[in-house]
Length: 495
Ligand SMILES: CC(=O)N[C@H]1[C@@H](OP(=O)(O)OP(=O)(O)OC[C@H]2O[C@@H](n3ccc(=O)[nH]c3=O)[C@H](O)[C@@H]2O)O[C@H](CO)[C@@H](O)[C@@H]1O[C@H](C)C(=O)N[C@@H](C)C(=O)N[C@H](CCC(=O)O)C(=O)O
Ligand SMILES: Nc1ncnc2c1ncn2[C@@H]1O[C@H](COP(=O)(O)OP(=O)(O)OP(=O)(O)O)[C@@H](O)[C@H]1O
Ligand SMILES: N[C@H](CCC[C@H](N)C(=O)O)C(=O)O
Ligand SMILES: [Mg+2]
Image (cartoon, rainbow, N blue to C red):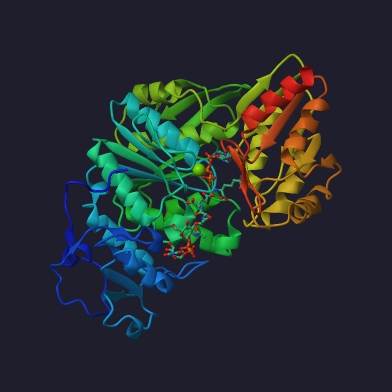
């Protein structure tokens, strides 16, 4: 990726505008800074190194490495004893280095988000899907659109790999800058609760904030649902316009706080709503209503949850002044969201769908749709991620047991945890139900079992990994693309 090339350096005084300085030894604020690094390994000649005390490491312990790599200014946090670096390097002490990184990065890249329309989508489920839909509508409206999120980042139709759902502030501002340089009119991005809590989107200029829903996830990080909500809420304080799901109880609280929201709903009264919903295995049909006008929509993205996501996308574009005909065209133009209710096999005997449901509510909504479209047994294969919210595991187990006819409990990115312990947490919930189940910790073997033992008309759902093409184990990450795996197993069993 380019790095502000051709635009030269930035003086310290301009780089640190709007950050609070508690202490400094800098004498020459006119000194040029070449770049910013938040990891000592990426520090280079003439750059500023911003030290962050994180969850795993403390950036302050890497100051020497950053200096060796060429850093000429360090930004340290309130608690740091600067006598350790006095005389060694120029420093600035500030009250929150994550915030400082965001402000300095926005300064460095010239506040690119002020130069295009910026839409942030937050909520537990549906962010990726809604951003894809908004992008498609804005393209139908004639715009060049940037996209930032879980699956990938995009500038128009070109793709850039994504590491996080919402990038670190420096990477985000750099991406904005690249998007601006390539002439985007608007950028639609997923805003994760982690990013709001960790100041990754601080100092961004949001035109619209969209709220999909709030249900249990990430309690390992936020502790309580109130804290999780408080993190999400930050986006709405930062946005000029707000688009909110009026069917969601947390959404209702946002609407109370900001009565001028554009609301959408399936069940409640709202500005934008859906009627006469028809679900099919590979598409949905519904009427989109706004201001007494109706549009018949044929949506290529299946799943009841996709109706909500299209309402969110439509309401967002209505807030931006896009007319309903264009909204219809944009929604209908979108052919798929990778790994979201994606049919990977459909033969005379069984159907296999992969989906990214990895939360209790996601799983419930997924299975409600399966209930509508399946003709035979509902077979659900899933696991829960390691190093993530443990309390969601038994809840997902119970939902699986209540909604499926047969459950295959397996692994989903165990990370540093013992896969059998994760499975034991899931079984706590499953055993509250009467469902028939098997445990097969190796996900490949589990998929093979589902296919080998498939009965006439089985509707097999592989949940949790969606678009992911890997499995994260304790000591390594292995390739794991369920689309490929399903095809290979079917081929092998036929031979
Ligand atoms: C909990 C969390 O989000 N942690 C993120 C956070 O880590 P951290 O600040 O604690 O970093 P750390 O590893 O402790 O290191 C502290 C500092 O020392 C620096 N360091 C470290 C080592 C070294 O040699 N030199 C050095 O300078 C690091 O660059 C860092 O600045 O900042 C890092 C840099 O941006 C992230 O990579 C890291 O994401 C971790 C890996 C992660 O898994 N995050 C997930 C939970 C996440 O953010 N997910 C959401 C999506 C959730 C959803 O939608 O469902 C997302 O937006 O992706
Ligand atoms: N509006 C919704 N309500 C409930 N569940 C949904 C909704 N939209 C999607 N889902 C479920 O959640 C899964 C993930 O959807 P999507 O990727 O759009 O969400 P996300 O918010 O981007 O997730 P992540 O937090 O991982 O970025 C889908 O595969 C589906 O099972
Ligand atoms: N953004 C989510 C994705 C979860 C996907 C699932 N496959 C897992 O690894 O738990 C998270 O990081 O919690
Ligand atoms: Mg996402």
